[in-house]
Length: 278
Ligand SMILES: [Zn+2]
Image 1 (cartoon, rainbow, N blue to C red):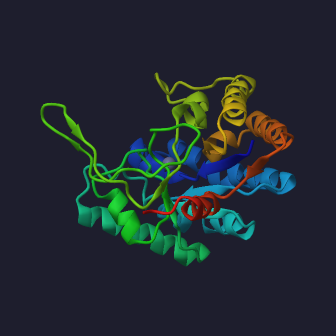
Image 2 (cartoon, protein in one colour):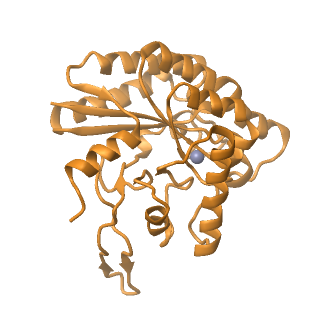
Image 3 (cartoon, rainbow, N blue to C red):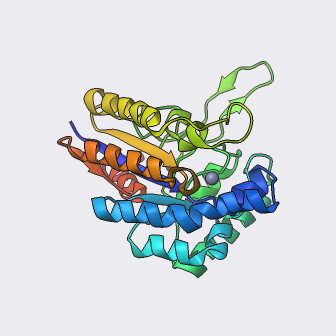
């Protein structure tokens, strides 16, 4: 049974502290800086030693603020995908605002690392009514923000309508490929201390490694052609014991026959070849 693993890293650096958490004093900024300064080199070293490819979702602001870290990711052959300009949620943006945000994000990635992203992950893990059509228009192949599946890719619907009486009218499938995400498979909620629930973090690396292994094990044993997508943040997973846990996890996965590691762009291309839009 074949399983494809996607190691994905959201390199938010300062952008999430500035926009999502609205904290711009020196210590929060330094927490984001840790991701580019310490997390990225540790993650790149690990991926290099184990010879596995990964996908990095990089806000435009991170590329402009820490260009060397982003160029180092590209130089190792990992995929760089879009994650907004400054970690702003697309929900509530006008179409024009959202389009301008995509343009600014893409220009920064092009300027710093000479890449044109074909994948997107929303910083809010939520989409506006326009996001999927903007992605399709701009030549993206995939999104990774929704949660309607766990271990299988799917075509996300466009223009669903939730009516005032609660009735839901489903729209047609978009041309994109969805890589579903899950809080269970995100390092931030387990590890990042934010002072109050639900993000009070600081679970042990072993405990989280066991949760992630159990998820992977189910996928590998029960889902034919399953995909296993982990979402991590260099500022979170980059601490020593967590990197050690991640290394053990990758080694255990690699030891299972039929398991492959892939950049998400390559998996999306394979999906489009095997399941073309009608
Ligand atoms: Zn993010």
